[in-house]
Length: 404
Image (cartoon, rainbow, N blue to C red; front, side, top):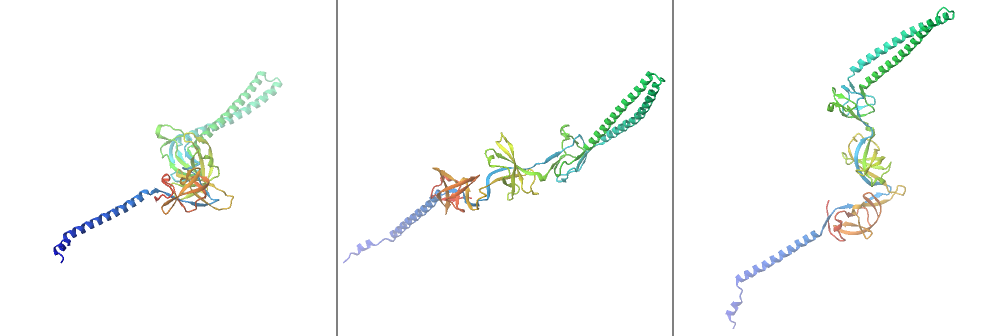
């Protein structure tokens, strides 16, 4: 017969059973926590291995299409721009121009006080008339003296008058002739003085030298104006500034290291700072044949193909000099990318192609280089994404995080 006391010893105490269950749950909790930590660490590790980069798309253009080879910035400037000033010093009594006014060539812009000039003109005209009157008197006297000389010559031949009387008659004719010549010259001088004052009187009226638009009004009625600076800050040297809007062009400074890429007649795309989405066709008009030694630049002037009223003087503008790859060859698609995406190693050229967040190092063959773009002959297709930032941190198979 089995001993019942021994069986009772094999029974598990309920308190021990509860403690064992608690210990089992604790280790399961620890194991779950370890798994969660491992997963978080793996995620963090994988994220830490990702490299941030920026990507660009591979483009496709026509073989005969113009594209950028050089960028520059400058300003819109008129070829004809003039600050209108008086030829003489005077007080402004009438101002007929305002900012924004359209003016025509020869239009009166302002008038100066001409009272003194008119008084001088009247005086010189009177002197001219007096000089002309004296000529008439001298001509009558000279004619009479010549008649007397003729009579004396006839009487001298018959010994009626003496040689002395004949000589006196001759001297009278010569004297009157000389006085008449002087009087005629005085008339010429008087007429010259009249014409001079008349010209001065015209100078009191200021007119527009060419058609255009008044962009500034620099003097007011009552102020003194002068062709030269005088009287400190109380004398104006100009009354208005006129711009010929038909002569607007672009002036840019091109680094002398790139001036060989620019030529007269070259097509240009202009983009005004005020209208960044408006691409304006233009072309190079002239290259100024001198360099600025301080800035190491050469000045280039660019003309607009077609002017627009929105284009204003002194506007900031960015220009893109264009070049044609091959206008004579049949049109075909050419793949291009930016030069910033290229990596050169062992005389080979590579790019880092990005697909599904993973980098693929790919060797490519390049062709013509045009400014910031380069032609891709093999290795890429239009639409491929390539990395352009943190290239030194990338390898084949590197995971990347694309940033905008």
